[in-house]
Amino acid sequence: MQAVSLAVAFVLGVLIFIGKVNAGTAAPVDKGEDKASAPPAGAVVKGAGKASRKAGAGSIADAGAPAAAPAPAAAPASPEEDAGSPLDYAVIQDESDIPPGLSEERQAAIGTGKVPIHREGKYRSPFAHPRFGGPATVKVGLVINNVREYNIQTGSFEAEFFLSLMSDKPMGAVEPFFTNGHEVNQTALADTPTFKAYHCTGKFTSPVDLRRYPFDTQRLSIELEDLRAGIDQLVFEPYQERTSLDAQFTLSGWGVDSIGARAYKHLYPPRFDRDDLYVSRYKFTLGIERFATSAAFSVFFPAYIIVLISLMGLWVPAEQLDIRTNAVAPMLAAAVFFHYSLTQSLPATGYLTRADKLMLGVYVSLLLNMLSTWAFLIMDEKQIDTVFRMARLWVPILTVAMMLTVSLI
Image: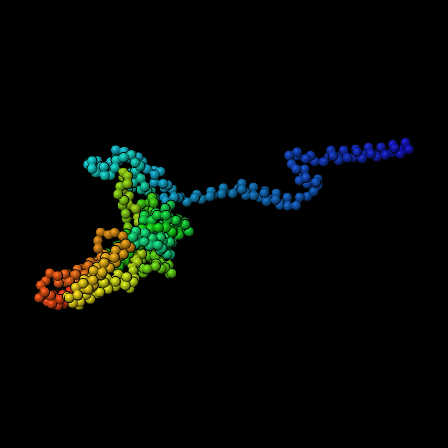
């Protein structure tokens, strides 16, 4: 047993010695690398030779070939892109900026305050932009979708429309401002340097012209300008081919008379010192007219009926004076109430409308009829028959002439 134990101990010692020899001859491992990533001793790494040859070839080529050309520089920014805001390069006005020899009134008119101005360019306004590189010509298109709640007393209406801006060069930042609108909501549909599109809804106000009422034509306008840019940056131009109405456009009580647009230069009264910059303004105009048949039956027809009924009293004999009088007095009251109802639906004006002239003719016709009746009270009984015949002849003639005159003017 002792011999067996010695043999086993000898074998274990030999094995331990062999393990130590193998460990001492193995390649050392870098402590900074992952041990699992190191290939075993004697292993061949596929592709290593190719990679080495490629790397070597590349090194040789790089060493012998000239250096590669540098990447081309970026294109310089356009004047519109690098000009910045006009106020960024404006200077504060001083005495040297006032032209010499101006009278005190002229100096007060242009302003001598410490405001930002531009010494370069045509305009001195702080909102001028002499470094913009010339104005962009912007073609403006406007398509009305619908118009609602037109109020003839105030000239106000609600409109929904599409607005498009197309320019021949980058137009920069655009801030559409509707000069005759309020509560306007704008949704940008497209915003590129040369094309912008908006969907707009809002309330607008236009002057009311009632001189030809009830056959009047009203002009509903939408006026647009940029909030800051002047004509040295933006010049609007109407795009007539893109100015129209939706195919299903209707406006209750009115028909479409005309559609048009124009652009013009507008100069505000000086809002501050050196405010000399014009702005480009675009104006869209929709002409609407009342339906002639409706106007005739609602205004002219009742007036003629009042006059016709009053004329029927001319054939009442003089002996029935009370009946003759009652034929005129109620018609006068009817004319007053009818005229009052017309004026209630219209705003106050400083001129006479066609309806006012018509009612003036009605009043004169009723007055002629009443004068012929009163003549019976002051004339001698022997002349009553003569007065009766003359009134029955001349009052209708004068009434017809009067009504035709006021109906045509």
